[in-house]
Image (cartoon, rainbow, N blue to C red; front, side, top):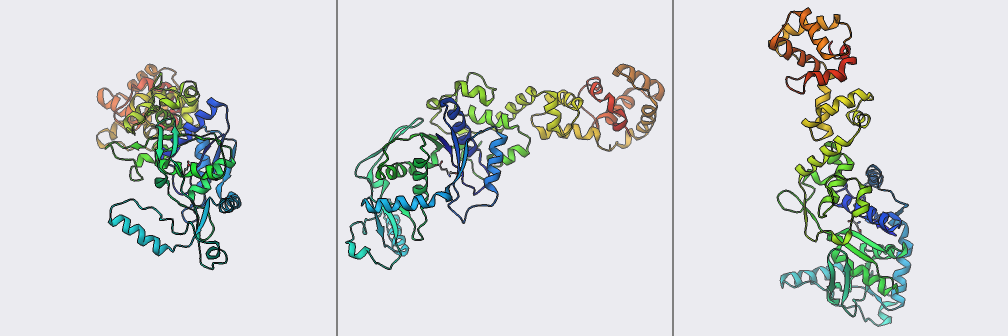
Length: 432
Ligand code: GLU
């Protein structure tokens, strides 16, 4: 069983989407299920409706899953497991106040050493623990030996017991800390492989240690994906528009193209343009690059254009916002000039909009409009053109520029014959 574990605390970042896609591909390759775990235990940071938004986003990208689990529904298990650890003497109650701990943390900072809990409460005699009215947290005892994490991308990574520390697993209010909830949930769901961002690498030995302490012997496999850098080589953050999946979709990038690019980054696929089902054929988690991937909007634009070219006229017309297949065919004429749906819409919209004719073509346009209104239907552009040229008496720039303006709303663009082919049934709507 694999899992994608988003927090409903913000917009989906391309890094999260990449994690979801990789999980989906590997679950398909292994014939294992993929579950979605909404990590909603941080009540203050949760944003209402984000969980649904994430699920809709996954659907849009064709990421199928078998189940959705809400982490908050597992809290009773987290509490039970924490009590078990206390009972087994693998965890202990800690009465140190936050002020005291803050002071210790500050001291470590001032002396430029890494803060470690000093295990002050680790061996308190029972009489000081039982019936002690003071608030307490629960800490797991630090491991006795090195924790080694086997990672499909990073290789073996070792963590010394001190780096893992005797860390808090339950807060004073008896809610689970993130690492504890996550470790227990992965165990309860019988997860076999965790694919996630490398920002979670430091959590991994802690989570592994929790499961070992609980007597869980199954070793979960890991793959921590390198971060994504922006064009300046800095970690992509919320300040980079392109880091938001919503923004990319609004800009007119196709889900299939975004997925294509996120898989391409850090991989060496047999071809550049592909869909997810093709990626399932060749994707190899072990050969994903260890170094950070660099996001290039120009590369995404190129990939998007290729995906747009692969759409049929019907799909294309739907994306542009029309039901008629001819508009999809017309859109194809414009594909060389654009890279996104938004840019394509900006080409098609002026054709059907009320047209602003520049002063210098005003007079010619009035004549042409009258002529076109009187013209019969012509199958071929040349017949149409010859007829209105003759009837209007206009020629040269006055004729061609004005006709282009009346048909397309702009002064430059593709060959009018190519455009006419798909617009001939709409001439009455277009030239008013
Ligand atoms: N909820 C975490 C996040 O959104 C993911 C945790 C995990 O995959 O283990 O970053």
